[in-house]
Image: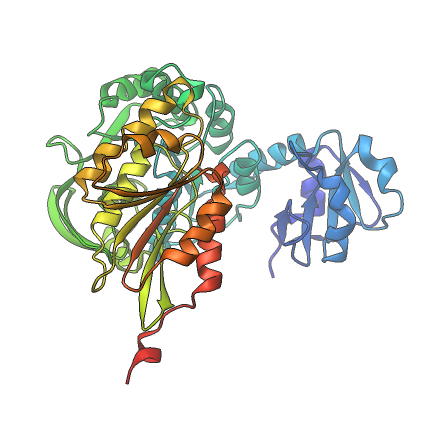
Length: 477
């Protein structure tokens, strides 16, 4: 396997002090002692909850070729005989390596942010760029102060494309990250009431997202959602940051990459998009209008970085929803099956509406029901009660008659829903999980959606544990 970094390069870039006989180099970088691979370097980052130095011995046992540790923690690691690079601060050292990775790269770089759809769009770009070259993109949602530099430092020198997701909870968090990434294209999926508890209004959120323009390279492009109210504001911010070319996507008549029409069901969709002045019919393997909108943004971005647009369009046929963001499971129950839609990764008003629409587009089997299993949207601040109550509208408009709820904030929605909706409410996620296991029936379509901190992933896990994956061949006579 080719080396990601030589030990000499790492030591010099990070201004580190070698201890022991370092290997020629490393094949990868990890901050997780449990999943580290043989030949990789373990960076002992100190996080908010755990300190990587406490797990250095596990990393060594699992095959770490060398470990990167801080000077202050060295005395506590005296018994370890593994080669080390000692630095003042491990996270700062990782950042230096990230900057060096960007400097040596000839890849076309894309950075994506937005209140909703960052990870989905990043995964789309990974898939649609792949036919045109070697793509490097973040695993999971590595979009914060350690995830972005880790992803950059992992970028192979021969990558043709790099795709980076950049997130934020507060103003000022995107700027230092995007200045590391230095994208050729910076895309904002949308602006919505995510993390509203940390901001006064949507304009403040838009201003924080607009920090992504601060790192765009000279001659780079901003890709913006033309359908949102903040489009003109974002375009102005991009220009103020020195971005001279602004492209847009959406249904708007003036969008550069336009979603002209959409047909969808619970399995996927067909869209007609105007790209480079030509209307194209495009099949998308994952369902949902929000997925289609992000697909148009991804295809437009492909075009901007010089990728093969025809092959990118073909790649969308095989698109699958991301775990926690619309992933589907068919589970055997009784003589039939149920459909489980996993939207458990995160939630805000915009993504809630999209998930409810996705549920509405999926047809139950026989006498099955459409069931919305909803948990609290966190970080809504003083707007929380109002935003939870306002979910009544999308649920009723979609004709959802069964709503199962958990969490303190969801009590507001429980009280707001009319008697025509069958509501089950529990304070604790565990109670709702037990109820779901007992109450699902053959033919049901069950959509599970909440903020990550509410732990609705446990409901998904419980249903997967209690009901086997369904196969048509297993049920043939």
